Image 1 (spheres, protein in one colour):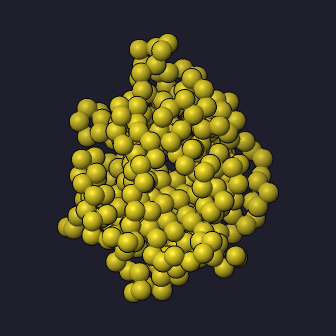
Image 2 (cartoon, helix red, strand yellow):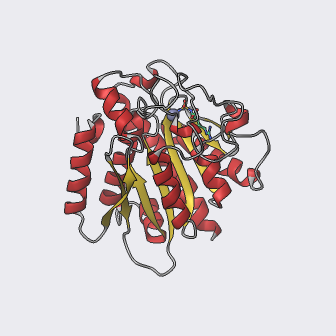
Amino acid sequence: STFYERYHSLEDIYEWINRTLQDNPGTVKVILIGSSYEKRPLYVLKLSLNDRPDKKAMWIDCGIHAREWISPAFCLWFVKNSLSFYKQNQDITKILDNMDVYILPVLNPDGYKYTWTMDRMWRKNRSVSKTSACIGVDLNRNFDANWCTEGASSEPCTEIYCGAFPESESESQAVADFLRSHKDSVQIYLSIHSYSQMLLFPYSCSLNEVENHRELLEMAQEAAQNIRRYYRNTYKYGSGAKTIYLAPGGSDDWAYNLGIKYSFTFELQDRGQYGFLLPPSHISRACNEALTAVKTIALKVIEKT
Ligand code: 0X9
Ligand code: ZN
């Protein structure tokens, strides 16, 4: 199997970031956006294949939940594909000609490291609470979108602990600060999770429909249709609250409210057979399915503008 068809330790991923930067001078930049609770750097790769004026951008984050290993694997897969198939594949070329891409391969490095060394099923970050012996905040409940209402918990010992206040965690704060300062260019926000094969869009923090619900529904539907056509696999799609559950404080809803109107959370393979323990032999299919969804959505956004 190739490098991209295996899961990689955090150290390997940091090394891969370095190598990707060195091998692609001019097209890849690395931006330090902050650090984790345990002081690990949060690096964002910026893919910029040409410099047109007023270029738009797409953001993709992976690994917000530590045990969802297919997610960082997808971020690496996406970068590899973009750099290899620019000027080879029409869709990739069109996307990268029209937008820069910001990729955060591991949003929760402390948690990811912990799943490799201590507890494979860890979900949250590793921050120590002032009020409890239990460790970790669910970073996807820590953003300022109906923060800590129904679907999150103020109890530090739960898996869906929202933290002491919105953006209390340095990981969520780093992402929020970066997006706030790039909101005029960033048109698409994508957050990669597993598992259950779903393409979700806002809101998850309320049952209300967003202003462009129809548009997001059509984009997700077309993405799911393309996955079915090319890979004969089924993805559900819809607003988060109606498709899985109410879950406030998520990055997708927060990014949407910031003004990034094309905001999605993807839940990659599988539907529960292996769950978080998706075997490496499934990485290529899972990532190609997600890549199909990214391309479908990005091309539709480009067509609109
Ligand atoms: O609950 C979550 O955070 C995500 N599912 S997971 O099984 N990967 O934990 C779904 C996130 C959907 N979006 C929001 N809740 N905002
Ligand atoms: Zn998740």
